[in-house]
Image (tube, rainbow, N blue to C red):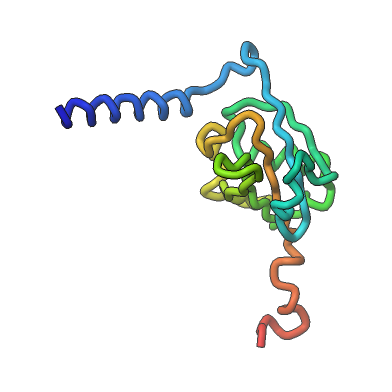
Length: 158
């Protein structure tokens, strides 16, 4: 009996994975609204999302569940000139309601770098368990801010 239940759980789990991996027909599927909040140098404070509030700098993107982090990076770069420089990092987090309290929680989902290929580039919204209604918070780290104290010291931080 236990083995049968495990087989059912495994089958259900594989159906969920298959659903997340299935490509979306963008001609026939209505896009979803992805509400994105970018900040340079750090993520927004989670308190910025409480009590029905959101940070002021909202970017609204209409996209699909098969959109990748690389695709979202490209869309952010189109409207944010400061983020176009090669070597700029984009650190992605999802902000979603906390089921145990009337607040939100932030969960890191991946990082991309402008001009470089990375392991998280191909992650889709479905793969990171994005739920319609979640917010996306992106920390944009320009290349010149990565290690500011190393300038003028010959590359030695001491």
